[in-house]
Length: 163
Image (cartoon, rainbow, N blue to C red; front, side):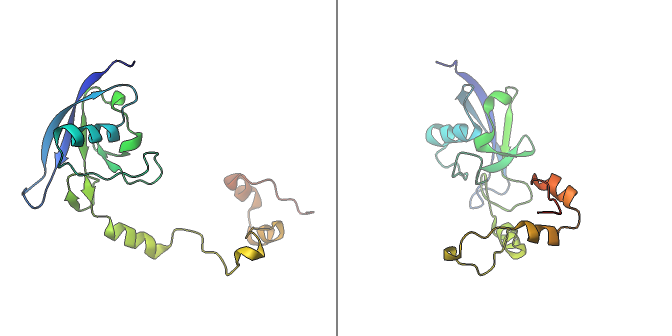
């Protein structure tokens, strides 16, 4: 079994219904080599501060729900390990977002802005029964003016003029 150590975790707390400004709270958290910050926050909520608020979902660094500031750097709590912060760790809500409570921020404006710019590929009207929507080599050649740079950037096979 892994050796357990203790780390003092500073969490910047804020409840707008009670507090006039954010304030620090300190918690002693047991950890081993595999303890993530998300695990530590769960320990704090389960054992020390049941009113602590934070977001999480996938626990696999995919969704981004557990984003927060760790020692002034934006990090994912599920991918941040206490073993890397043996001199101390300070956890705050993401910078530049309105704080709803503790480590939870209001993402409304961010999500609306993201949706407005549509940062994804918009498909045509092809239906699934028409087969997959794939880029063909002739279309690729016709739309790319610098095939070598595009091929290198996209990790595509070389485009030859005789295909």
